[in-house]
Image (cartoon, rainbow, N blue to C red; front, side, top):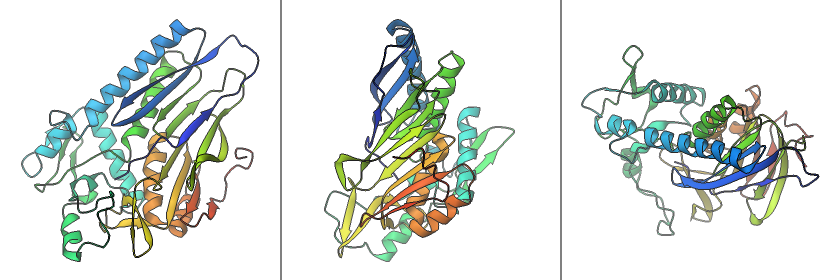
Length: 328
């Protein structure tokens, strides 16, 4: 449903030498770029933490990868319409939380979107809307309400053949949160997990200042749109400025509404600030689908969640309680 380029850059303060320093490692996982930053006393200590983080993210990738037939997620999909599949409690809980987020967003977020037929292409070949029947067929097997779960057996069943689940709109956020908690349990006092624009921060930079995050201008990728200071928060930016189609002069995002099968329109960039990357990841997609007015009203009703929205014409909107001290 959502593919996000690395649209967030980290702006680390440069100052006096401190007892601890920032160390980082970039790598590829889940089909995108990751970068883990940790604050540690020296390179050897940092390397051990970074290696642990990378191993954990790759482990999660194997667990939630819908494109790997032998993964537990792949087994759920291949058993659709046949039988339930018992899975690890970690995956089971993620699916349950995903269903909860679907209810919260009235279906704007839905992990069963993965069963939609590929009728939309964002390579310039689609110049008009597909026929209504094609769109209807593409969403016929979509619906989080259809997922059957068994708490005692930790089993998941997709009752219709052809149904699929996928974690493209929540998996990277979950991996960021889980990896942060792992590093904290190992004694890492501060750092950032950057999952291709899905960020989870904790602690501060070595000089005691908050982490400074620069969000690229969605209308000019060579410029920073705004700077945000974060401490123990998550930030996710989702944009359509790299993958979209134009139909009758109107821009449509690669982010498709799972309820209608139609690409979202009106917004170019959605940034969500929340207490967890998993939540921010899911809500970034949801608000894109909802649009500016409904999205702003929705976010304003959720305590501890804020958003910055950029429309196709460059207009910027903020949720009611965005901390002005964080943004400059």
